[in-house]
Length: 175
Image (cartoon, rainbow, N blue to C red; front, side, top):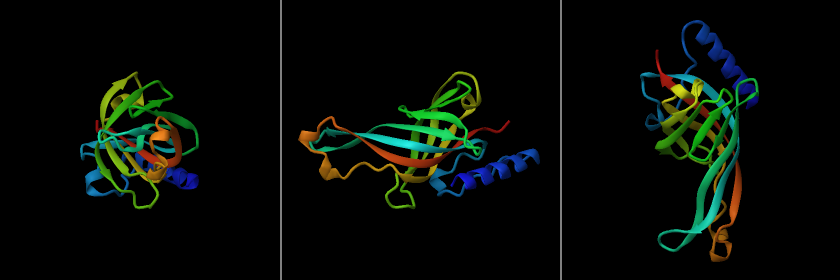
């Protein structure tokens, strides 16, 4: 997968040098970033989805997503973004974007968290992520909660960490 990311990064740099941004990924229509936006950052995430066992409004126990915790690397394998609760992404340059889910699609791989399209909800700091308006989470692997029968009253408050990986595409308005 890392080799694929390196190749994608090299192709993106070549296209950027020719005045074209990196190619957009093939995704279902509902997950496409708006047409007036360009891809400004592509990074691969490895980390965990943290779930907590708790009672819902119906008093039935279930695993609820608490937060993601992941490191995103560029095509050279360098850590560039930290992903955490919010959901938020903080770049090494100090810029940060928080997102809100606007579309969700089941992942093509079974046993993988859904693909998402998120819109920027807020920004802080100056840098690459301060321009971001849309974020895609695709090519997911893993990250699903434990099986439902492992969350009952005796496990109330228990946390579980599910390893996952994904590709994140960050978009900003064309200028």
